[in-house]
Amino acid sequence: MAWRAPKSVSFRACIYPSSDREGCFVAHCLELDLIGEGRTPQDAVVELIEAIRLQLDACDNASQFFFPAPGRIWQRYAQAKKAKRVFLRRIVQEAVRKASRREYAPHFDTVVATSSVPERYLAASTA
Image (cartoon, rainbow, N blue to C red; front, top):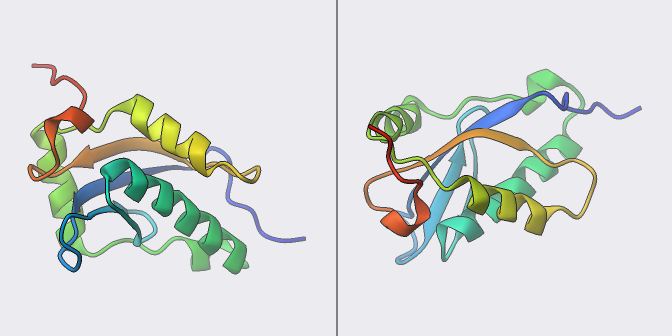
């Protein structure tokens, strides 16, 4: 029987502009050091979900699945979270639905965006 990630696992992601491709965004999962890239932040999240699924299929156990992102990504995440740059929950949910081709759909606890991501993708900040 293949190893399956527990359904209760939730992930955190940070969205930022791609350094390699002009006009593209990266969605980076902190717990897995996986990325998705797309023309919009939402497309990047869809690609990240697919990367998580592919990683899950390729792993035999949890030690192969969980591999944390580098410290600089965690720092970006912390700065964006402190600045309350939280990605719109409905956009994340739409991305999960769009990517739902199989039974496993990852749950994202928090998705934040750096200051370079347009405000229209963000939830209204709460003071």
